[in-house]
Image (cartoon, rainbow over all chains, first blue to last red; front, top):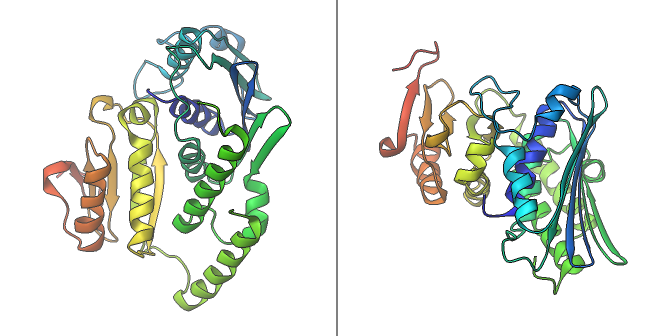
Length: 182
Length: 129
């Protein structure tokens, strides 16, 4: 995967598959590092599964016996001078945190975060997505619960709404991280 | 600057349109894009985005776009399934943005599957044709 936002989509899809009703994705730029936290209130993992979850031969999937999502993401962070951690509690949820050195030559670009959030909204059915972008004093919060309230019954996955949401997120990312090469 | 107020205006316009169109029903066209690790790394997010933009740009209202996981054919991703009301399910393999545009123009709008990219045809009884 050549964009961090593709990894984020992949990891957050795990959250939705774990029956989360809320997935929180937070991007924070601080001291030359990009911190990404993906947190859900899904069904979580048993301890033995959690301990081997970054092994490519661990997966919950039935269609094949290999799970590459977390191992690839861990590698992307570690290759870029960052760290990777995963915490999970059965019945409570999972949090995946990763950091990336912004100036590291092997760091993949963030890529199209708005397209990632849009894809997640399409995948989420009734679940909600909260996306936060922070840099210093600046913060932007996008919350599908707020959007759904405004929409008042109109489907959030309607293609015109999705286009609007993508434009809104892109504009705000530009305001928060403008000038930083992400 | 995109704001929630502007979103309210879009909502109000869409509500009026919905009343004139009636409710969404089983006559919808279904597009399903595989969005697992294999699909995403092969370009499925872009493909999904293209379908969404094309369907909107061409003002096609009766299309439901959804996502699914890995079906075990990772090397053929991005995989897309298109089902027109009352017809066989057509599975496309190795779809990219340009192919997605062709599929919308030919299959979704004119009802003619793009044979060159078809991986399988499954009838309504679930039989592979």
